Image (cartoon, rainbow, N blue to C red; front, side, top):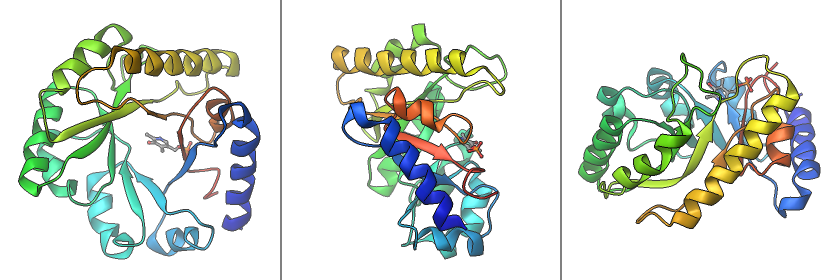
Length: 221
Ligand SMILES: *Cc1c(COP(=O)(O)O)cnc(C)c1O
């Protein structure tokens, strides 16, 4: 049952994050799930969900609105920002300045300041989005020019099928990057959130300092 799987994931998160004082927030990734499958999450105490497509958010919104906080976790095209700006609580995939500019424009129009995470391509995979480590600080400084964009931390995705030792190394590096960015104290940023870990590796992410994990298939098998 979904409730049991949520409880199992939560138990792993609690155990692995003991050294950090607080477990990461569980974001249930619902991209393969229908509204009927999503609703029982509420009974399990999960109200944060992740979707990776604008179209899917639009379609499911009538069911989710007012019940769930929706995180946009996938790649976002600038011309689609306007369709979700009022409906998501955070955008996890900011990785180029044109997108920041458009989020700023639409956020200001909607009278809000959009919480975003900067996606880092820590494994330097050519097919993946995200800024490189070297570009991260200049990118954060450039984002500070946009009052409608509130940078709240970093997000990353691991290579598929990588070994656990490799993944652990990337997670450790991401936590270092977050702490470095916080020390740099870039104006108007608030580097406290670290979104990393999926079904295959959320235990490692919790161990190495994630503040949010994005778990789909481990909950909705
Ligand atoms: C699908 C997806 C997830 C969840 O993946 P699972 O392996 O099903 O847990 C997490 N993050 C992003 C960006 C995704 O697209």
